[in-house]
Amino acid sequence: MYPFSRKKKRGCGTRLGCFLFLLLLFLIFFCSLLVFAARSTSALENKPYAVHLLIDNSNSLFEKAGTGSDPDLLRIDAARLFITYLGLDESDTAHALSVVFFGSEPQLVVPLTPLTDDRRRLDIFSLINQPPRMGWTDHVAALSMARNLIEGGSDHFQPALILLTDGKPEWSNTSTQTEKLAYAAHLKTEGEAFAHAGIPVFIVLLANETTDSDIEIQALWQPMWQEITSAVPPGRFYTAREPGDLIDIYHDIVVQLIGGQTAGMVLEKPDALPLLREVVPVESGLSQVTFVISKENPETVVTISTPNGSDISPTDNEVRFAGSLSEEVWVVANPEVGNWTIVATGPGRVTVWKDFQQMPTPLPSGTPTSTPISSPTSTSQSIVAAPASTATLPLPPTLRPILPTAVQSERELQTAVSTPITPKPNWLFLLLLIPIAATLIAWRKKQDPARIVTGTLHLIGESIPNKAARTFVLDEMQKTAVSIGPTHANIQIPNCTSTITIQVNDLQNDAHQL
Image 1: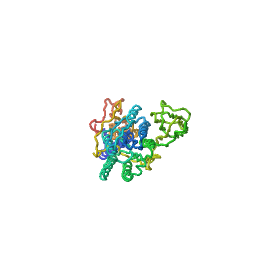
Image 2 (image 1 turned 135 degrees about the vertical axis):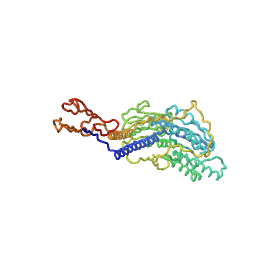
Image 3 (image 1 turned 120 degrees about the vertical axis):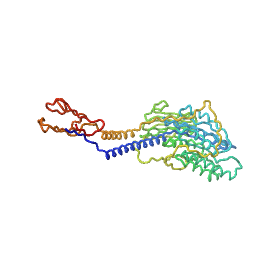
Image 4 (image 1 turned 60 degrees about the horizontal axis):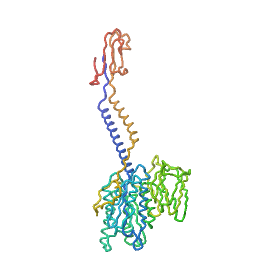
């Protein structure tokens, strides 16, 4: 009897298997790159902002000989509203802010501080409430200080810059044209540095009759500011005709930064009215709605009611609140659809804006674009949706000032530390891995099947009564060992007293003659 085991095909089959194996490895690597890129983009989009607020406190802002661009310090009120709003609408994102006052020299008033709670905001308010007169106006020195702050900051933040000024750079009454052109070149260099680093810049010009009639502002400085702000979206250049316009502009800036949308001003109560009631519709499909309130008089009371008539409270589960005497920000998650009511009572002017965020779209369609937010005080300027790198690149060492000692509060403000983002599982990656792993396992099993006895067994001898039963196909038994012998064997031979076993050789799957 001559059993034979079936030989495996070599050569082409093995090469094909190796190719398939390498192809699967490449697919796994490629999918990993896609997931990494998606997570990197998502992490970049979720980075909190580090906003550096530069406020001009040169002599021209204060009352001087009966005039002044902002003697009532409305620029500080606008900054308070901005600080109150930033980050409140995003419970899992801790934005940070620093404040620099500048005139002849810049002064770091508030180190970079996370806006995580009302206590920190109150600490900041106490530091900026009484700005000093600071002489002339040096924009380059202020921008250079902000640049140093960004260079020394954390990579966990996306930097952004806001500069408020009421005029052109001045450092002397006798500056020559050559000095002015050299200064303009330095200012342009600073602006290009922010553009190369992908940092959005917002510049607010507090304009008046003096700035309107100044040929240098109109011909040199304002075009340069517009060029700086348009380099990186969502940067913008604003012109405020009155100090009161600053609150609306700062509101617009924070909406731009957080990527929200605004329905604009929904309530404005002048001084003369003792009471004003306004119905504000809240549409379906909104994940949250934000009511931003600016009050001229702390005695003014603003009440917000849901469509069912109940007043919202800071202690409600779906409500987040921040504010003080002159500003309030209410964020309502999953707002009830219908007509909300806002009632303002008491003395003083009050303004209310309605901002909102849409529910996330399940399936994206096309390339998203950013819609410009309408603002009565902003210049007409389209905002183009474009990916902006937030990596801080090396900035040229132009006019780097020595950082002055920061004014300290009663409790020293801590350096901002970003709240870590909890990684979320990528289900698409897992779904891709399942079929890849199943295919790989199936291929390996095909390349290395279970070793069984194969071939055909022929019994030769006259003692076998049935000739049809003399031939056996061993493959059909699917056994690693086949016994031949008496009644207990796999193949039974009548009157046989001994047993023969055929089994696969562990060292090689080859033919054996027994």
